[in-house]
Image 1 (cartoon, one colour):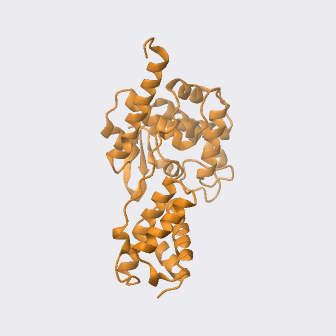
Image 2 (cartoon, one colour; image 1 turned 30 degrees about the vertical axis):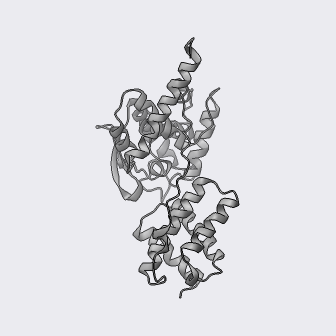
Image 3 (cartoon, helix red, strand yellow; image 1 turned 120 degrees about the vertical axis):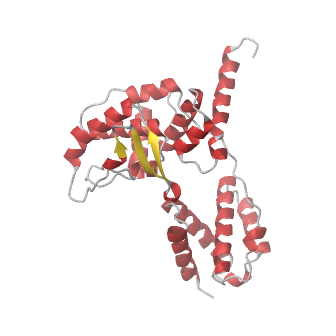
Length: 294
């Protein structure tokens, strides 16, 4: 029977190279498995459905959120299937484990007027200002995830067709359209900003950090928070908030659900449907505020 370090190392390889999960998910799953192994005292031999249910019940009693419990359940099911294939477990107890469902809170979104105010706020002509404006325009125009934005190369932007090539979850490629404001902002960055930051090793990255390397997700999050903070009344949110806003505004403008699903790169239409609920809730709020007999 392998020791804890070997179990974690082999599971990490499985997640990275066989399942092709994102680095964030891999880190979360390894943390979850380490917690389970600690509960087991480092011994896999005693792992069965009763132990799994007891461990998850302890997590619930400790006050973990439904989202965390749902992730830990998914991790356990993935791990026990993997361990059974490796003959580390005689059977797969995860098959008997129900799928925990995380509560799906409606995401916060910008109003269309707020989005326009954020994107139209006066900006300067220094490389950082040009880059930040291009990032904000492209995030809102395409609804891409922050990791997808950071991974973009210069050649991924098709200026003639007004689409950007995105490598999404599971390395699935999709093409996402964008409009003229985003194109102009990206062009200004590429012509007047990016050349001043290019260094040896910059490679083809579309967006660079101040030292010339590919931009990272943390920097993008700080950019979004800072830009939203410049507009009175705009909610404080990160890049994913712009993704939510883009999807909601598309549906409010008449886009069909499947087109939005394809644009966002959702594997299931059920994931996209949350934005119909957002639109309905916004409509109800406006009705309650405006109708004399609401």
